[in-house]
Structures are given as C-alpha cells and as structure tokens.
Image (cartoon, rainbow, N blue to C red; front, side, top):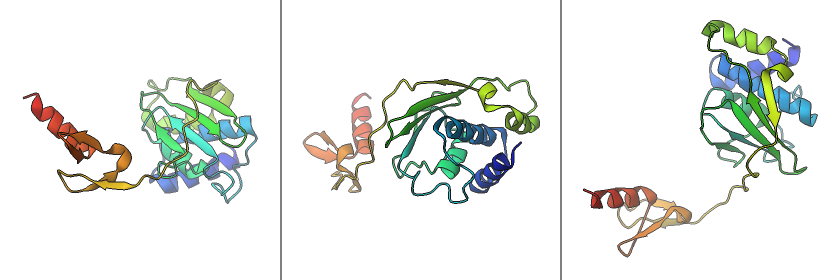
Length: 187
C-alpha cells in the first residue's frame, strides 16, 4: 500500500467511522479516477474548491464505498454532485463538468470467498488496473442541483419543493400525501 493510499484510507475512515473492504473499494476507485484524469489526491486540501461541484459521481450502490468518494473527492448529495442509482454494483460513473470527461469504474473482482477481515488488505494491495473494469458511462452527466420554491401541502400542511407537489382532487398535496391518497382509493 502506498503512502497516498494509506492517507486516503485514514481520511475516508475518519469520515466513515471504521475501516472495511467497502471503504477500500471506494478509496481505490478514487485512485483509479485520479490516475485516468491526472488528479492529485495527495494534496491535504482535497477535496478542495477545484474539485467541489466539478466532479460528479453516480454510484450504483449504497455501500461504504460511497463514503470514501464523499470524503476524498467532495461529491455529496446536497451539492448535487453525488447520485445513488442502487442496482447493487460496485460501480461508479464519474463526470467532470468542466472538461466534459467521463469514466465508469466497475469492480471486476469477486471477494465473496475471501474472509471479511482480509478483504480490505487484499483490495488495497491489488493494483487498480487489475481491480476494476473501465468504460464510458451509459448515462448522461446529471444536471446541476436546482433550488425550488416551497409550496404548502393542503393535506399535511408541511412545505415541500414545488417540483414535488401534485394536484389531487383539486388540492395541492406533497408526494407523500399524494401516495397515501392514491393508495387509499385502491382499498
């Protein structure tokens, strides 16, 4: 394990709360991206303002690996730079909004037969080119985060983004109340 990998694992585990194989996958995915895009992840300022809101990640899982991506690259749900499309794959589509580069990184090794306590070390010791499969993403870069005005649901009286308000029986209702009302009709 390189000194950079060790520092990235420390940073990611401080954010995540523990060290595990999933976190190691995320760290190695960040290193793979850095190699392909010539990013410097050894900088103590990473994630820095040059990466924030520039790099976008669409993760195909909801595992520990995503915490490594958040802590190392600065991709977050709130900034509109991290999206989760959970299809159960250790795969990540990355987009650079400035350069228009894109890359999909997918774990290409099965660790099921490896004891759980050994996975992290094996993942960290495996060269990234052996660990992942690389391709172009099969999706477009997600749009930048939008800020919507709020509207009050006429049923629960809670505020919701206007983009999530529905019309039901002549009343403006939030998505949750809409689902409840719609489902109650099927009884």
